[in-house]
Amino acid sequence: MSAKEPRVHADPLRIGLPVWGFRAWLGEVYRSDARPGDFLKQYANCFSCVEGNTTFYQIPSAEIVARWRDETPESFRFCFKLPRAITHDAGLVGTAGATREFLTRMAPLGARLGPFMIQLPPSFGSSQLMVLERFLSELPAEFSYAVELRNRALFQHPRLADSARQLLSEARCNWVHLDTRSLRSGPQDHPAIRGARHPKPDLPIEPSVTADEPIVRFIAHPEAAYNEAGLEAWAQVLADWARHGARPYFFVHCPDDTYAPGIARCAHSAFSKRIPMRDWGVWPGESEPRQLTLW
Image 1 (spheres, rainbow, N blue to C red):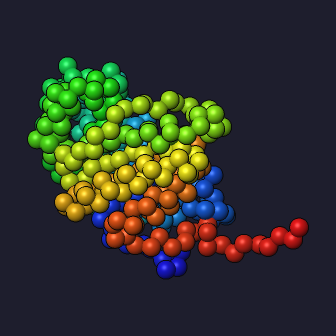
Image 2: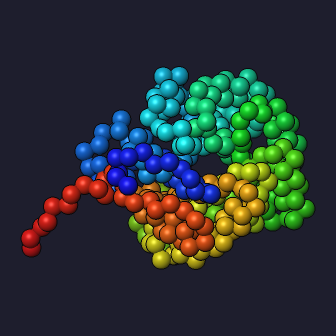
């Protein structure tokens, strides 16, 4: 397949990255001469989905949303985060109007919308599960949603974990699994880890499917070897989910996302051993002729 031809998603799971605009990917995901306005279109030629972290901080204009729609194939999926004003500042309380405004703004993306991610702060614990239940019950049914819980007690106590799982299952809402185990399995003195802006939560992992589109956010170690065991373990889980009809998303993060595309290729290779997946071929930047250097 030519790197210029649009790729049609036909895999039982989607692999993507946390952003689509990252200059360090020039000559890899993007052509070396790509401008920022080219990034999304070239990214969508490599990956079938992306996290939309930008909406956590700011709601885009209608014009920008229309541009995102026009620059991606209908098979592509955006998984946008709800704004932090809703999830963190207001704690999901009294946010019906703001939530409706946000969803209405994003609605023109239509089929390109994957699950909206509702990332909750570590302080959002068991005493607030009823708030979450009420919030989910009021969400428009025409969209898909996924919740990322970060309160450690919800994972440590089986009764609380079961309550959270049941809540999401009854709401037909997906679970977002944040996995930092591979990151923590390797040396922590790597420059990419030392330079990270935010520490990554260390949460227990118990893979659960509460709706049709479970999400995994895999925080990788910059050195590929330390991710192999984690990717193999997820390959088995994802294959089982897919066999039972789920359509998982797997997002590859790294403290320095310069490394994320290469680790995503490692994930694709590991998953392809268990799950029938298309050949990724070459990316726009990789298709460029390389100049030979004489030493």
